[in-house]
Image 1 (cartoon, rainbow, N blue to C red):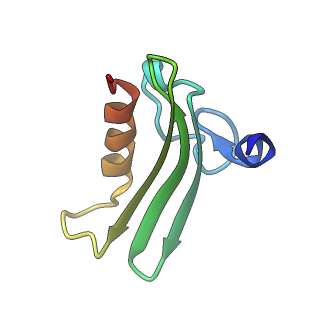
Image 2: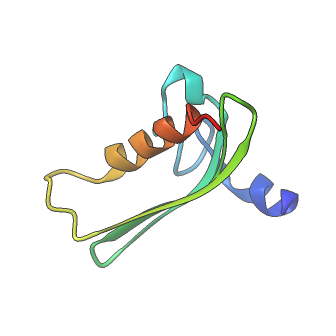
Length: 86
């Protein structure tokens, strides 16, 4: 799993997550892959929570109706996972 996770984009780094997940607390904690096709948007990967747990997540959005892109919604889900407590 480590080589796979290491191949994913890291938030705040290069690639598709360069300008996403920019809150200070999330810095370098998200390794993920974005996807967009025919009205479906996804963000899937690994996140290190503030408690040190590794969380595997996938946020898929189909037929977004709230205006704009669903990226801020997906990013907010990651922020909530970051602060997850047992």
